[in-house]
Image (cartoon, rainbow, N blue to C red; front, side, top):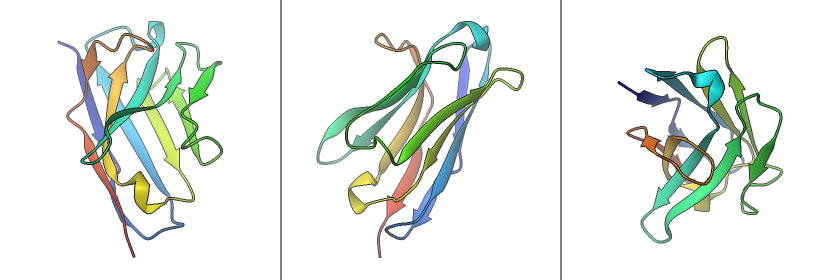
Length: 116
């Protein structure tokens, strides 16, 4: 059974940082592209970032480029997202997903709340 379990969310003030992690199991993690998608009440679902299976190629939404960094540890089956210089508009539920353009498995999500 494929499982994606996010952790590391929470509340932070604008300008602060958080690190999200996703523990993957039930599939060959090192063979699959991975990513992050977020959901906000106002904008709905928004793709945030993707990384290829080897961790070489990455891509980011313009809204987070230069502030967020995606990475992975294939030895530990873990995907991470470092969130820096957080803004109130980054408030959302962040989902770990398998795949790049076609995302077939999603975690349950982890809330990041940015407010002063």
